[in-house]
Image: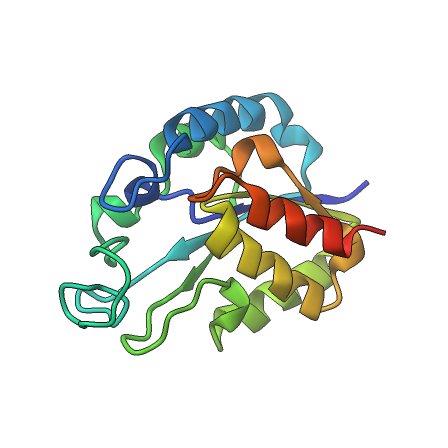
Amino acid sequence: MKKLLLLIDCQNDFIDGSLAVAGAPEAMNSLADYIAQHADEYSAIAATLDWHPYNHSSFAKYCPTGPWPVHCVQHTVGAALYQPIVDATQGREIHFFTKGNNIATEEYSIFANPVNGPALAKFITEGEFEQIDVCGLCGDYCVLNSLKGLVENGFESLINVLLPYTPSIDDGSTLRNYLSSIAK
C-alpha cells in the first residue's frame, strides 16, 4: 500500500515556544519514535509549516484583532520543524509546503494557501497514495482545517488520523467530532 505521512505544523513554537499546545512535547517525541520505527512503511513524507512574516495580521502585537502571539516567523528557530522529528527522518526526503506567508491572510489549512494548497493536492494525486496518515499541531485548528481541505479536494477516503500524535488546544473533541461526521 502506498502511504503518505502528512505532518501538520510540527514546529518548535507549537511545541515549546510562543504558542505551545499542552501535551505537544510528549506527543511530538512519541511521533518521532513512531517515525523512526515506521518510516519505511511510507512512500513519502510531507510537512506543512506555518511560515509567517514578522508582522502577520494574526499576531495581536501588530493587529488589535489578531488572536495569537507572534509565532512561526519565517527563518526563525520557532518556525523550524521539531528537531527530534528531523532526526527520525534522517535519510528520507521531506516535502515541505508552507502557509500563512501572506501578511493579511490567516491560513489554518494548507489548502487555503493559493500556491501550496494546489501543490500539495497535485503531489497527493501524482503520488497515487492509497492512504494519508495525518498528524500534528494542533488538532482543533490547523490539523482540522487541513483535513477539511483534504476532504474538499476529494481525498476523504484516504484519510487516517494518527490521534496520539495530534494534540489540540481544546480537549480533542472538536477534531473527534469532525472525524465522526466524515466516518463512513
